[in-house]
Amino acid sequence: MDPIGPKSMFTRSRSCNSTTSSINSNNNGGSHRSKLSRTFHKVINFRNSDNKHGMGACVFPSQHKFECYNPNPDPKFKHKAILEALLAKIFASVTSIKAAYAELQMAQNPYNNDAIQAADEAIVEQLRALSELKRKFLKKELDLSPQVTLMLAEIQEQQSLMRTYEITIKKLESDVETKDSMIVSFHKQFKDCVEINKSLEKKLNASGPLYVFDNLKLSRLNVSHFIEVLHKALRSVRSFVKLMVKEMELANWDLNEAAKAIEPKALFIKESHRCFAFESFVCKTMLRSFNLFDYGVNKELNPKKPDPEQCFIEFKRLKSVNPRSILALNPNSLLGKFIRAKYFDLVHAKMECSFFGNLNQRKIVTSGGFPDSGFFTAFAEMAKRFWMLHRLGLSMVEPVSVFEVKRNCRFSEVYMENVSEESLFSGEINDGNVDIRVIFTVVPGFKIGKTVIQSQVYLSPVITPPFPLESGACGSAWLVAYKVQLGY
Image (cartoon, rainbow, N blue to C red; front, side):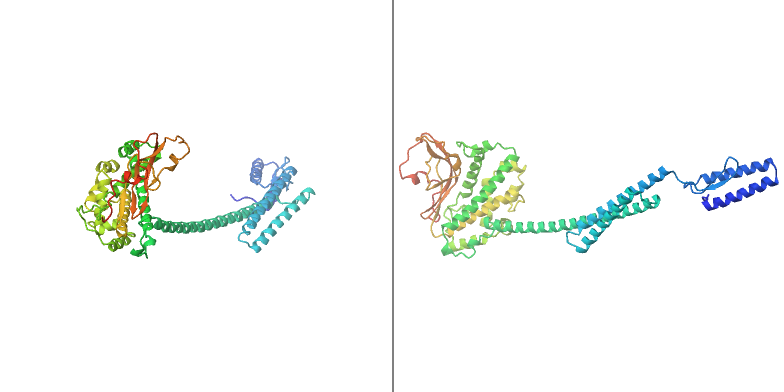
């Protein structure tokens, strides 16, 4: 049913009043008409009382006479409504100030002069509006329509919130763009670092190009070149030993027992020194038959000495070749045979089965393949470096020989280098009878003509020397096992 407006109610009230008067004047006390009239008035009164605004209601007085009036609202209610409208207007202004301040901050970076001025004017405008509200409130001059003010304040607040959200979205989008640019920059830096690392690795890694030898002629080859290649080979030994020790730990090996199996009489001052025993085992295995022209690959009794120039050409060719490609292209080459032979000498079948649970790598190596494992890749790289060292030794004019130091020999700085300096010369040994002795050789030494490349040894102090040495006779007492000159 449609609501009845004030004008229609007033019109109907007048009509009802005239109709009732006419009925009363024509019929003095007709009971059924009086009853109908009262019922009609009740219906009109019920519909008018349904009006929620209290504007222009039609009431039925006790004397059965209608009075149409527009009552004034309660002063307390009106004052409360005005205060609510005032607070809503204040909060709307504060929200607008927040939105304008957010716009001001957003316009700072990147700098936007027009946006800054607009935001500044908006803030000043809202502050003036608040100041005016304060003045009217203190002087009791507020003339607000509660309903209209509430509605306008709600609209203003929602608009300000929308502006704030838009600014927040722009700020987040700007942050995303900044992060994206940072990601791109970091990717570029990462690529640059990778390239730098590759460049450094090529310089430090013998598998990479040895740029020193690019334009080097055979006639200018000297001991320093041999030492450089030797250091790279020893670096590969240490990398392989670390990998081997890691596999031992994963296989639950007792590292003390493993080191003792290699050097039964060695007493290690520190646990970390056990790695020297493993390095000794690897170096001695890899340098076995180094004195032979074919490195013991063909097992000939009297192998012919190869041409030094051809050996140097092979060395320069191998410095940038991957061992995998060598085995793939020519598995029966001397280098391919050398890698297989040294793998079988160094990695026992029981060791391989303990490390990997099977002998698949051994089968692949036997068939001339290249196992796809980090362990064999590290070994093949190390083997290639020793083969290159051998080829370089054959390229030199002066003969090259290898020597190993006997156990219990007195330390000589001319022929030896201690691998654990901190364990001996710490100031704890003051007894004059204490002598420094060799426990075992870690890396055999080299002699190139009259030049000695020191052997790296593990030392230990002893109280009484086990046997006397002739003064000045250090060399003849301990140069053993490998002192056969290349080519002689």
